[in-house]
Every structure is written in structure tokens, then in C-alpha cells.
Image 1 (spheres, rainbow, N blue to C red):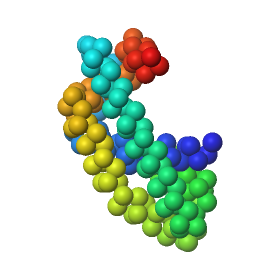
Image 2: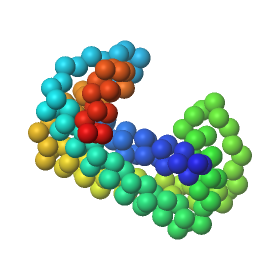
Image 3: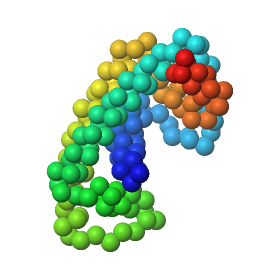
Length: 156
């Protein structure tokens, strides 16, 4: 379970976060987004989403490998990473851990563009624009009806 937290945290910051940065969308997560979407559009989104999940799995595997190559315990790396991302969270680290952490993060930042490019390619090969994909993704965070429609498509 701790490994999942690490991967979620890293993926959000490195891979998924980069998709948001690519379009320079203004950040207004508190405000619900309402979007009209046809069944065909949601079906396309579902297909793109599935491909993105495959890229995420690939990214997770590579990220775990990077952490392990530095002989870093996954759980410990996660603790340090979360503390670095959250100013309210504190964690004591040794000088060696700081060095390992810096090396791992530097390596992860070098592989990020590869996954970012894969995500861009998946979207550009679809019938959705990057902007439209992001509109739908934002709307799906808060629009329960849209979530139900997408879930039905993905299960059907």
C-alpha cells in the first residue's frame, strides 16, 4: 500500500501534473466544471484514458526501478518525498538520504519528458484536442453524471 502512495504521489507530480502544465490551464479545482459531451466523445475519452493508464503503469515501473537502483527503500523515499512536497510535514533525513533523494529526483525528472511525449502522442492520435481532453478530465473530477456515463462506457 505504501508503494501505491509513492507511485500516486510521483505520478501526479511528474507525469499527470505535466499534462496540466502542457496546456497552461488555470487552476480552479474548487469550482465544479460542467461540460456537455456526446457519447462518441466520451467513448474517445475512455479509449485515450485507458492508453494513459498503460503509460502510467510503465512510468510506475520505471520510477520504482530508479528508486531501487539507488538502494533506496521505497517507503522511506515516499516519506521524504511527501515531506518535501508538503511544507507542513516534517521528516528527519541523513546526509546520505538527502544525496540519494536528490539523485532519484534528478533521474525521475530526466525520464519525465519521455512519458509526457507519450501522453501528448496518445491525445494527438485521438479525435480529441489536448484542450478538450483536459476539459473533460476537469469536468470528470466534479460532475457525477459525467462520471456515471464514462463508467458505463468503460464497463460496457
